[in-house]
Length: 176
Image 1 (tube, one colour):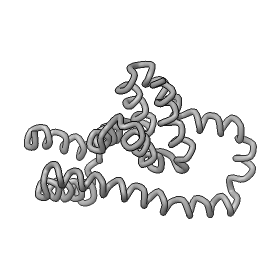
Image 2 (cartoon, one colour):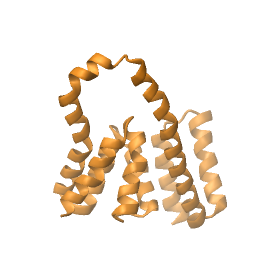
Image 3 (tube, one colour):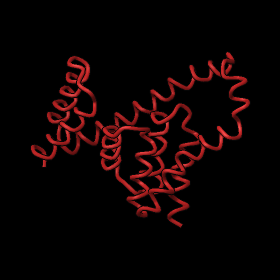
C-alpha cells in the first residue's frame, strides 16, 4: 500500500505542476506534509534545501528522497518514476500536438497566466518556512540568516548551493 501512496503523492503533483519543479514543490509539500503526514514542514524545508544543492531536477531529487525515506530503495524508484511519469506519458502521447501548437498564442497566454499562480504558491510556502523558523529559532536568527542569504546571493553573487551549505553549517554549529 505504501508504494501506491508514494506513487500517487508524487504523480498527482507531476500532473498538476505545470511549469516544472518550482510549480510542483508546493503541491508535493501538500501531499507529503498535509495529506500523508510523512514529514513536518521543517523536515520538508530541509529536504527542499538539500535538493536545491544537488544538480538536476529538484522534483525528482525530492521524490527519490521521500520515497527512500518511506519505503527504502524500491520506494525511491517508485517516487522517481511517479515524478517523471506524467511528462513521459504526455511526451509520448502528445508529441505531435505539442510540436504543432507550441507557438500558439493561446498556449503562450496560458503560460503568462500560470506564472503568477506559481509565484503565489512559492510565496505562501516561503511564508510558512519563515513562520516555522521564527517560532523555532527566534526572530534574530531568522532575520540574520535571511539577510545574510540575501546579501550573499544578490550582492556578492554567491551560488545558492554555497549559501545553503553555509546555513547548514551555521545551524549545526550555532543553533544546535
